[in-house]
Amino acid sequence: MGEDGNIVIPPKQMDRILNFDESCLSLNGSESRGGRPSAAIFYPNLPCPGAITSKSGYSLTFIGGSTASGQALPPHLQFPTSAKIEEREKMRMDIGNHLKFTNGTWGLGKLTSMPVTLGVNEKGGMDEEEFEKFLRNSFAI
Image 1: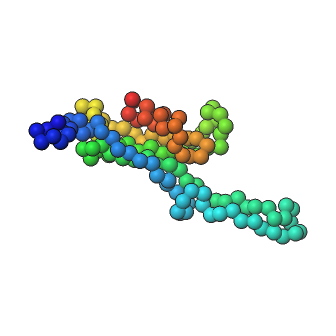
Image 2: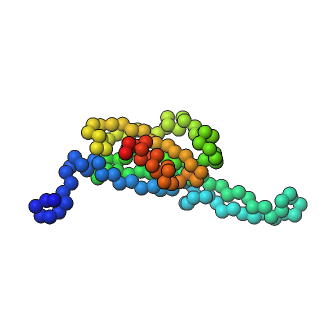
Image 3: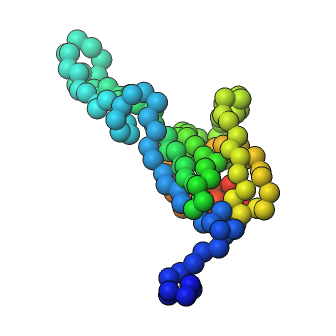
């Protein structure tokens, strides 16, 4: 505490205070998850009259943020997958060729360069398990 009773955070500790948030990132121009709505098409001479067409859309979760001192945190992208077991989860690894590294100290005491981290799960969203993986892989808690 400072002399005036306010909480004082030493400047060196500002790199250790993290603020990040998740957001939906749409890759097809839709404003939210899911793309266009499904539609029912009825034509009696076609097989399965009244069948629902699938909706189009591709969204993933983006996590970004900064330290209290203003350093950008390395981003995280969480992709959807239809794989039911971890061994079948696939991702094109050349995506990493197009993603920039983020430089900062993040409380490590020296300038460090960290990559964008990637994850996959059924809905491409952040759940408790994926959030823990993100923290461990990005910030080694």
